[in-house]
Amino acid sequence: MRALIIGGTGTISSAVVRLLLERKWEVYVLNRGTRPLPEGAVPLVADINDEARVAALLGDMQFDSVCEFIGFVPAQVERDYRLFRGRTRQYIFISSASAYHKPARSHIITEGTTLANPHWQYSRDKIACEAVLMQHYREDGFPVTIVRPSHTYDERSIPLGVHGANGSWQVVERIRQGKPVIIQGDGSSLWTLTFNTDFAVGFVGLMGNPHAIGEAFHITSGESLTWDQIYEEIAKALGVPLHPYHVASDLLAAVGQQYDLEGSLVGDKSVTVVFDNTKLKRIVPDFAPTVTFADGVRRALGYLLAHPEAQAADPEFDAWCDRVIAALDRAKAELIQ
Image (tube, rainbow, N blue to C red):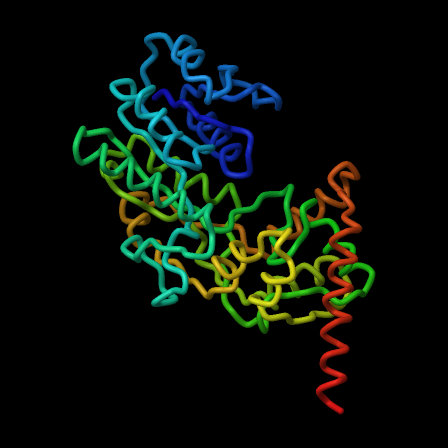
């Protein structure tokens, strides 16, 4: 079986590439060649946005599955349609579980849940991409499969609700230093976190699977934790107590526009979601996530603490947290008087 992975070095796609190689797929990876690939993957070095260059590079190659991990707007999937129509038996588009209706009509999410997100342009663009591809499936027989990941992480990242532009390290530092840590809402909404190696099992199970054509699937673990539990588990792994500071999501969105909190919180992480993976498990019976968050976060913290180059300080975000907390403490003191 031959696969073309567009991207291939991100959190999700890197795990997919490794599992495909383990399962003896012939794996081609199309990207700009700025990061190393695992042994056995065949690099195709090009910018996917250079359509003529990519078409020339592909020549007359045919694939069992083409997987698009870096498509975000309709023009990009229209480009892929032109490039891969008649060249692949399956085209898998990575959408997003943030596309599901916000605010949620029900906290139990199935693939039939309405797609609508007025809070996040990223999600609306993914919805538009899905619409374009499904139209090509219905009208032209383009063999599309839609995959909607939720919050997937790996050993290189600590999943958080609120963080700055430089990622998770500054929040980890606040926890280590005993400083208050902002958690959106009251910390009681449920969230689902999925380790990338578990995600890859579900994804690879869809590749080359005739039952996946013309269908959409989300791929998530079955473990749901409150945000307080998520942060408590991080602190526990660090061996220190957590000092949570709860702040309403809409307030964070208003005062943290530079961090796109309207989309990532109000349009996603502040809403309780529990994913029903019945549809996926029906056609990928070996999908059974094994990495709990308690295990996964320890792997991620171990990597982060052992790699100084991954410890990106963010003094601007740290100061912003202090200002938000100080302002709310002043407001509380004034209202209590």
